[in-house]
Image 1 (cartoon, rainbow, N blue to C red):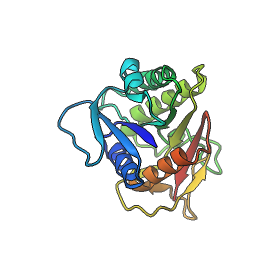
Image 2: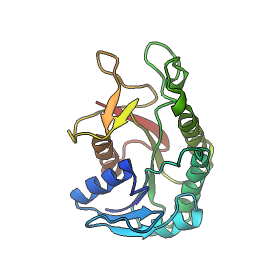
Image 3: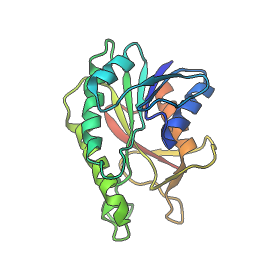
Image 4: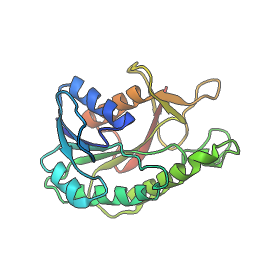
Amino acid sequence: MRITVFGAAGDTGSRVVTEALDRGHEVTAVVRRPGHHHDGAEVRMGDAADAGDVARLSAGQDVVISATRPAPGREHELAATAEALLTGVARTDPAARLLIVGGAATLTVPGTGGFVIDDPDFPADRRPIALACAEQLTVCRTTETDVDWAYLSPAALLEPGKRTGVYRTGTDTLLTDDEGNSAISMEDLAVALLDEAENPAHHRTRFTVAW
């Protein structure tokens, strides 16, 4: 497949690029600043918040994956970026499939009915990005578009780690283990994204993954 990855220089995006290359796909790794290198990928400059850049870098591609994260203090840009991604991908013909890495804040906590972000112990310093991710998901759900998008909410804890290739999939409820923990490595999140790219199972909806 021909896959474009926005946010390819980030922690998650770089792992998505690696996973896609390891599977033999042709990867266009999009970065905002020069100097980044991914062996085996075509590195291009571009901005996921610019619909023109998105259209240019999505043309002829099968799948577009966005793993972008704004800098602290610029969290509000995330919703506008989602809109630009949807607009830009829609301009391609045929339109690529769009996979967006989002946040876990709007997942429902099992047994409570509340959202992750409503937990009293939710870290205050993570609220800005959590709220921005909620707006990002709203943009996906409310924008009128023919783009076949899917929004991936990770587990509550997403950190660099090992690639096990094993994970569980859900929809709008936080996935937890028997002790109530919810976690997945960035490596296995990349596995889940590429599995979804190769075998589409979620269309114009949100899904979540965790160990």
